[in-house]
Image 1: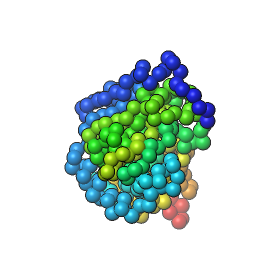
Image 2: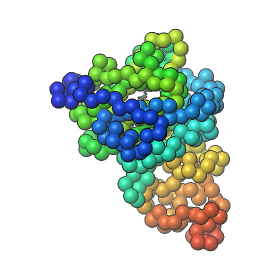
Image 3: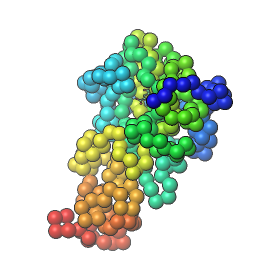
Length: 313
Ligand SMILES: O=C(O)CCC(=O)C(=O)O
């Protein structure tokens, strides 16, 4: 990594952090993200959903150890496997505004996107600021071309975010800055927003959790989405093996990555659709192409579920 200040023509002051209302349309959020690389959508989730997610996750958060390095945060608890542990999170995972925008950046026609991570970051009092980073650095600092996004992260505020409690810090406009920078906190702006708001950050946008100087914890649920041809940050198949996935709705199972990512990507055994492992009673296309999806009766064009399966299917 090299250490340098942003270029004068892309100074932080040049780009303001966009704020949108919960009624924002996908094209408005996309416009804001194209411009700034990050945006806040105020009060996108209801208080009821926020409190249900928190109460379902609470025992797991209580049992989670704090991090063992500065990026994880030595006073931060990161609780994962959220889709299986908190059914109330499904509404956030599948939020229509988020899915439309994720599809725009991550899934051209014939391709899909999946959940990368769904994990809380609970900053306990005294937690210092997280190093400023790009989420796309997960992928070995690969030099993705500018404007080509591989990941999109939605930080759902599960409590009010303030500058004092470590509300996420972002560098608006930094998705266009050179890669590999070591920024300090003064090159970012703190996000203050109400619980239920969503801080949306492109994988190329520099950001990080702030420092928690308050006497309470600051909790975010970070739901990242990524192109289906990249390895997921969190191992969703260990978090949620097929017998657990069977208890989840099909759209969430698909987002977890059980579906094919595109033609010939992620198929199972003899060309079977991996969704078959979760729902053996439904008929999925066999072959390298994605093929048609089952109809409401679980069949494709009236085919029996066993069609195309091998002896051990
Ligand atoms: O919790 C936050 O505010 C940001 C977390 C984050 O950016 C990360 O862990 O990668």
